[in-house]
Amino acid sequence: MTKIPIPGGLVRGSDRRTPLMAAFDLLGRRWAMGVIWQLCLHGPATFRDLQARCEGVSPSVLNARIKELREAKLIERTDQGYTGTARADELFAHLTPLRAWAHDWAADLGVDDPPGEDD
Image (cartoon, rainbow, N blue to C red; front, top):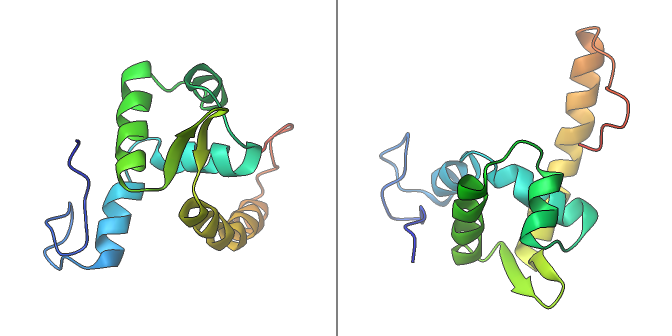
């Protein structure tokens, strides 16, 4: 098993050991949110499909994130490939308002949404 940050344990960036800081540590890892976002937005994917969805992620980073997110019970392996768990879907629902905020913020900065953007 990999070592994922857990509430009560040591986490990067904080001595407080709180659930929120453990979540920030896990979700702040390179491509962790991207993997969850792609699986919740587009549904199950094989490793290769997920790598294609997460443009630019190396196989070793993707493999590490999959292992961590599986251990954290945010994704699971099914007959259809990797998929988000109910807990990942719940996280995704909480991020949807942030998505709208980010688009508004980009507009405030005069940045147009890139065509085909599926963030």
